[in-house]
Image (cartoon, rainbow, N blue to C red):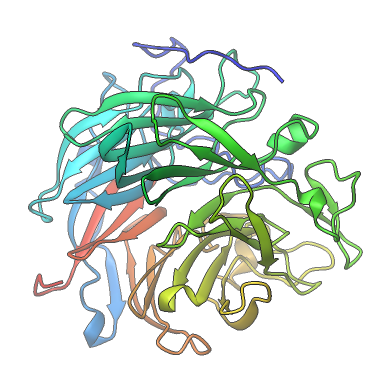
Amino acid sequence: MKKRNLLMASTLSGVLAISSFAPTIFAHDELDNVEVDKGERTTFTAEELDQLGEPAVDGSKNLNFLKEVAAVQTEQIYEGIQNNTADVYAHKGFAYLGSHTANGGNGGVRVFDMKDPENPVEISAFAHDDVEGTWQEKVIVKSVNTPDFNGELAVVSVQQLNRKADTSGGFLLYDVTDPYNPEKLGYWEVYSETNGTHELYLTTQGNRALVLTANPYTDYYSHGEEKDFQIVDVSDPSNPKTLWEFDPRSLPEVSEDFNGYHWEAPDGKTRPVFAHSVIADNTGQYAYVSMWDLGTMIFDIKDPENPKYLGRTDFASDQQGSAHSATLAKGGNVLIETREVYVPVREGYEEAYGYTRIFDIKDKSNPKLLSEFKTDLVDNIEDGPTFANTVHDPKVRGNTLYLSHYAGGVYAVDISDPTQPKQIGQYTPDQSFVWGVFVDKNYILASDIGQGLKVLMKKNGNK
């Protein structure tokens, strides 16, 4: 296994071309060999945003907060280069917006002061000049108190545009106790011939801080030397230490000659397997890993050096798996799984784009399917392979599930009865390509890959 030192880059490489076209997208299933681009929309400048039409809003009267009160494109931190956006997070009155691959990437994380939600102000950027030729999709920020750090800690995924470059992906750690002046603390590197860490999660256990990482294809490209899902101790953010990694070959349904990607599943089909995303519950005791066609895997991580595999979701033989992301509801007793299916027609499978599944996980060793929720885009297969019509990421607040859905914008779903989810609202920007959604107590944030940050509130402004 080769490792590279962190490459500091104060300027972008000269290969960064100025372009308004959206980039090739990474980290759906890059080994799928399907010619389809997530970046199916233009990356708009701030001036071009003003020329777009009004967003479409639909919903029952108790869900009128899906009103757009602000739409802000990120600033150009490199002259003449407009970065585009990825996921979004909020913490203590500030929004943190990750960036995607447009125009050479290296857009970093943009921090917005949200004191006035109708007028978000971009106040700083970080993680944009640390590792050349990378993009910074995912950011998680939490309050951390360990013997080595006390404050607001941000972890940022780092992915290479070229996995053969003389760099490594992984994740960066920043002190954002003062969001106006983020301070870099450390960097964790994964096997260098992968793109890096795609999604991650920061959690705490007492005075210990852990980062859970999903590093797609690490097992495959390293020939088993490293694994896709790893747990890293970041209690000392300047010195992150890998504690544990999961080997799928430990499962009875995965053979010892598994190559890290092609799984000979019990249904007789060869299915793709890689870690795409990971979350923890509010206690930091359980991890939920989106492992594509192995489903959402549940681990007891109370002892993070020795986690225990508990169970996983599975799929009908005619369902493409594509377990992409997950969230929890009902006090952690309900698991919501989104499936990013972008090729709706494959031999031997149902014809559909990706939709959402809801599970009872009171018994974590035996997840039970309660329901499936499909939007109006799921069966619109006339477009063929596209990311526009598949669900992407889920978030929950109370009894409402929010789904980012690319061309569909943001859907709101009542899950008071998780066996009968009901759509109760939808927000769709003009030329929508909504990547992420985050629910704060005072507002809902959406990140549009081409348009930047969207802020949604109730029409009367109340939470």
